[in-house]
Amino acid sequence: MKSRPAAAADGGVGTERTITVTGQGSMEIAPDIAYVQLGIQTRAATAQAAQSENAEAFQELEKVLFETYKLDPKDVQTTGFHVNPEFDYSDKQGPKVTGYAVTHAIQVSYRDLETIGPLLDAASRAGVNQINGIRFGTEKSEQYEIDVLAKAMANARAKAEAIAKTENRTVQQVLHVSQGQVSMPDNGLFPARKMVELTTEQAVSTPISAGQLTISTTVTVQYSF
Image (cartoon, rainbow, N blue to C red; front, side, top):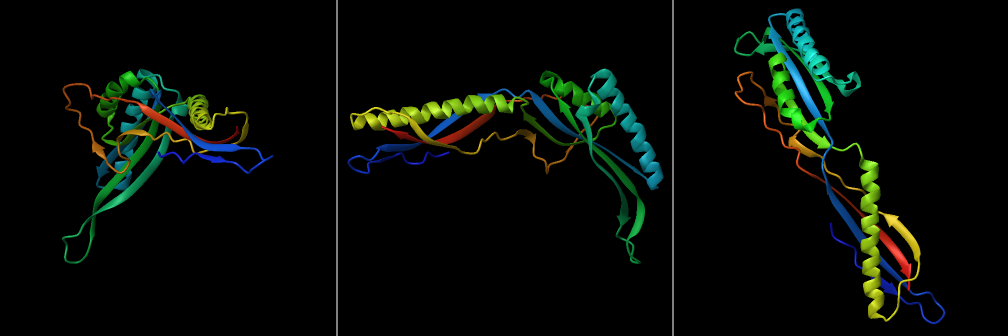
């Protein structure tokens, strides 16, 4: 992100001299939560049979999430449930329904980032056959925003002092401050649009790395000097 040019203004005798600068602040933080998008898709000749198979698989997934991994129910949210007919388009008389597909999608908020891989493996064994996305974030965004704001203000002050020094003057007081948008991009392992199929034949635990998140902001500050 580029800084706005610093500016010094002098309105003449009796007019307050001002400097306007843009300060930047950023920091890297370790994620403390993962949002995992899981799905179970089943197919059968009838919608009822596909739904029944899906419900059975979902019960097994719930055992993994709530009994094995002790998740709080509030951290598991249904994000989609779809029943769709499947067609054979090769028939000259027109599309023919050949069966039904049922998809149950959920989002899991998970905080033990060291065990995401084993969680995915256990979910796969329970019947999960889709990962629609994994992204990492933080539940301490307000705290980090305050920290990065302090860095941005310190950066603005340093710029203002450097400008004032060239005029053999010192920075006096803050006259006006405006904050820019706080930026903290999600650290996504898989894009939301990409579907990853899981298999139950994995020999080793799925490796998952949370990496780092970068939070940044800017402030535009006007000082007298």
